[in-house]
Length: 241
Image (cartoon, rainbow, N blue to C red; front, side, top):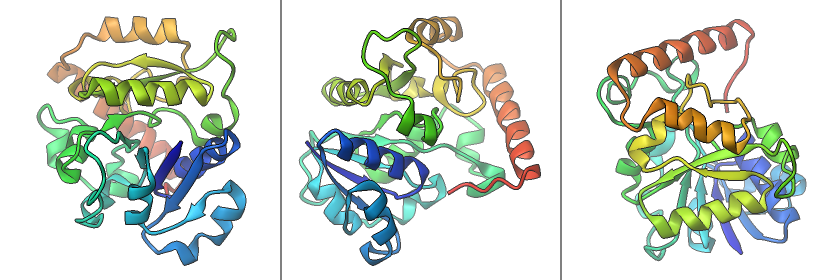
């Protein structure tokens, strides 16, 4: 399969390593141009290109850049890209460490990927946001293996979601349907599934317990949880890319 990755940070590079090892043709882009991706190409086996070239290469497109940079993507990014090509969004909102405060995500019902979808002007499928890059690259297991990590997949387009879920399985993880994009709050930072590496049965049980509609109390709780996590990361000098 041809896969385009826009973003060469931790998650983008981890995906490129795994996807090329599985025989996929991967083109990868960043904001600074393909000439800056020599080391990434050597590490991952992906071909450095521009963002537009990565998008036009993909039977699946992965957008994995800092949330704050989404509005800066080229306006013609998806020109010539068929409407049925799935676009994966891996983004997370880090107001303290990276993104600054976005009132739309702190007040109201808009999810992170809903915000991304509005800016991209394309339906997106949310996945790969709640797993550490090292685990994504190194902890995939064959289907049926006890303890296999599950990954939530949320989106509004059934065909695109199924194609993405098949890719998740190929990468070595159980794909768990997290409902619509409006329900993707259940896999955002601050929630119990974030970074937890849960098996599929536990993840499904967790989602069932949360319900589908986020309450104001849940929203406040998860924002507070995430703020504490960001404070701890800042104290440790952790920087996000």
